[in-house]
Each structure stands twice: as C-alpha cells, then as structure tokens.
Image (cartoon, rainbow, N blue to C red; front, side):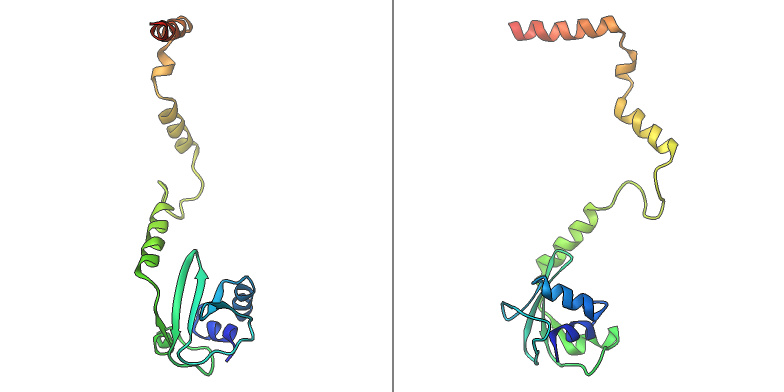
Length: 145
C-alpha cells in the first residue's frame, strides 16, 4: 500500500491529499529516509511523522484494506513515540490558555477598561506636574553621589 494512502487509512491525516502534501514537505520519513507519496509500505516498517510540532513514531503491525474506524487503529499500528513528545504537547497546550475562557469572544469595553486601569495604576494619576520634577531631581542627585 502507498504510504500516503496508509496514513489516511489509519486516520493520521483527514484526507489523502493532506497526507501527500505533508510527505512532499518532508515531514514523513520511513526508516530515517524521506519518501515520496508512492512509496510502498509493509508490515514492520517504522514511520516518523512530524505533525503539530511533535515527532510521532509508528510501527506498522498490519496493513488495512481500506480506511478503518478509530477503534480499530491500534490493531494496525503501534505507537513508538517518546513520552517526552507528549509532555511537550501538554506544556504547549497549557501555555496557550489565556485569561479568557474559550468561546467568550473578543474582550468587551469593560474588560478593556479594567485592563487599562490595571496597567496604568493609580500612582501616576495622583502626581501633579510639579511632583514629577521633584521625582526626577531626586534621581539625578543620587547619581551624582
């Protein structure tokens, strides 16, 4: 079976053309060598796939006749990916979470005003123009000593 068709059959990619495109971009290798979409695969081959900034490694156990259901995928491939890669993926997902929950949309005017108040703070609003001159003159005097 062709490698692009195999990756589509075991649900690594949503469409066969996406699988072929990723192979063309050299994100898929077989036994350490980059391959073309037409490369035939057989049982026991080790495929390395770069997807979502993670290096997956899968071993072919059995070749399916056509696209299979998600529950049947473990019968056809064996995951050999390092545990560190999955930890990296979890850390990336945690770092992308923001203060807003997903689906809340854009910040409202109230959110923006609250953020502006937090960033500006109250200390700068209380100082008059003469106080600023006094503030900076103290800094210059300390440098002269």
